[in-house]
Length: 207
Ligand SMILES: C[S@@+](CC[C@H](N)C(=O)[O-])C[C@H]1O[C@@H](n2cnc3c(N)ncnc32)[C@H](O)[C@@H]1O
Image (cartoon, rainbow, N blue to C red; front, top):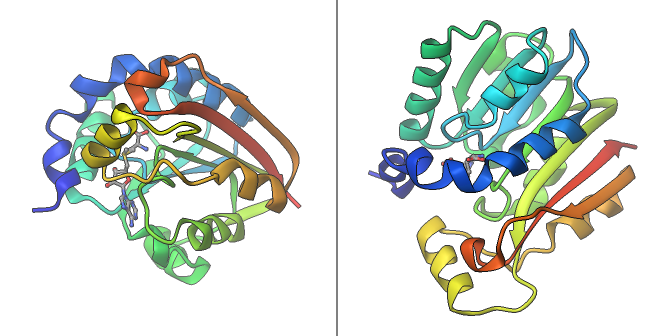
């Protein structure tokens, strides 16, 4: 069994309090409008969904993750809340080509909004994965990334990296800035010692 399948059993109970406010800010920056389609990449247990639904229920929401365990929790979350128009599928983010996604969702893979929270520090080949995400975005669509960057490495950085199987050295927002327009970046108010570095949200529009 893979680590995130095991982690899914206590992921929400151990982390949700810590990240809840940051999720709200990320979703505010998504600037959701009725009728839009959104995909949450490396959606995990679907912890973003309740904030998305609280903002706008008139959206078509997709979530994808590699871990079956995380997706099981995500599906239970959807079922328990009776959320409509919310579909999950399993995928390695490195394989998210438009044709693959089309096969999974049975419609054209053009998303108005993409969100990825704490995914790009974990997924291998993250730069190629970011390119793949941008390929799935409609013209003028928005992408919002939340992640951690360790400006100064310390014991907590090492601990978080071991626990989350993450690499907190990735300068994800800098790459996003180069590849998008209307770029915006801010730090989120979460203590560095709790997440191993600076938690940031970055948003850009497809060029
Ligand atoms: C730290 S969790 C973040 C989960 C969720 N986005 C959140 O905000 O709570 C990282 C997630 O990345 C997923 N993941 C790891 N490698 C992946 C890959 N190659 N493709 C897709 N998802 C992956 C894990 O299964 C896990 O759900």
